[in-house]
Length: 529
Image 1 (cartoon, rainbow, N blue to C red):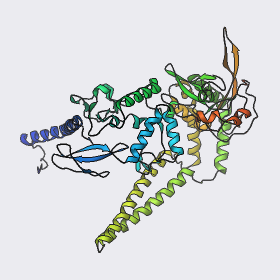
Image 2: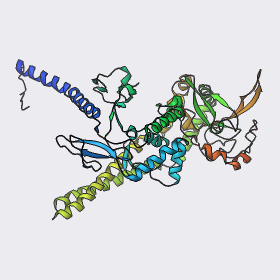
Image 3: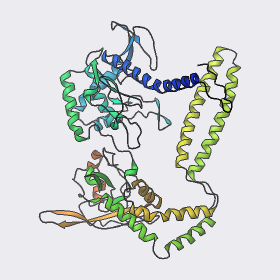
Image 4: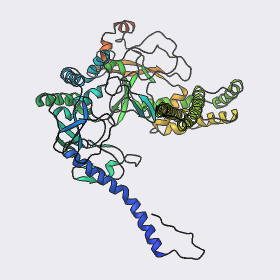
């Protein structure tokens, strides 16, 4: 704004005109983002109400096309191409015939086949999924799309309104200034903020979404599309719209509780505001194999904490532990961990790429012709992408890298301090992330044995005992590491002959176990991990 505000001399008052101007500029800077957000929402609403594209990449089976004011198609736009021309807009029209044929095939199979099985069929045939080979970035890490089909990919294709010749806008709302509604921009309310008091992405109901006719014909009859949507809604049941839980912090004993009868891990399931652990084999076979062996999750967590606390706080245990730590610290080498070694290699590689970028920048300025300039420029862009990937990998490794201690005494004191927090953890039952980290560090596992108990009218399995290995202690059984899919389990006769799943006593051969197994179940919605 070309304003100069010289420093004031001691005792000098600021000019009232300058003070008013500064306040007005400050106020205007605060309202700029609000006005910009409102303008963007109004512009996108106008485009959506007329059936035009509001931005983003085209859906699978469709392509972006430039049209004039009367809807005449000018040409197809390439991916990422931006055109600003008065009276012209972008619409989504059917794309390559091979993609449309695949959509027709998916819609036909979905009427009789679940989405997960459709995805498995397409993967077995080697058909690449949408965006296969493209590079995307998740959590700051760039990677290539694998090209594997998932059930969510299948259902998203089936629920695409463009198949019914309709466009939809406003399915989700995001932003920290204002949100979209049918009437225009709206202010954020309490439902737009998460537990951390930060704005979150919310799902808008269908009544608040803008729908308009598309510039193409339906790919399938409307009756078939409506029938398929009803089938998908019926299959989804009460879980429709609920995201899958991906937070292992809510699962302190995840992958650490096993049913001795079948050697399967016990999966976390929600239960009346709490959670429990149920035999995974019983779940995956729909109750046809094993038994409904289950244990209350918070109770199992408290028991494991009490066992750890009782073991470590026996008379003289802390003193013996400190002596053992000191003896190990003297004999242990100062070799870095695997994460630190990998982090060091990544940093060296990053320094090498930075040196190469410096050289390539200089060569760009010395290019003698356009052909040489383009060749050097392509290599420069490739190096920049490699540097971005390395920086993301280094940032992720730094979060996993354990703290470094300058002396062995600091390491010993840090280990003893960790043990000293156990009484607090045993009382803070709701601190699941810290409890899960504790179990991971001490490699705690829980192998449970169940016994049939005669109730008044039926027989139920109740917990009768078990084994609680800690650290390098061997497991009492060989943990199951085979397939977990429902179709694979039906033909897995070899495992059924090996393990008498109907025997509730669970007497199996005792074999050593090396480390902690990951949860083998397919991650389901709600709280199961």
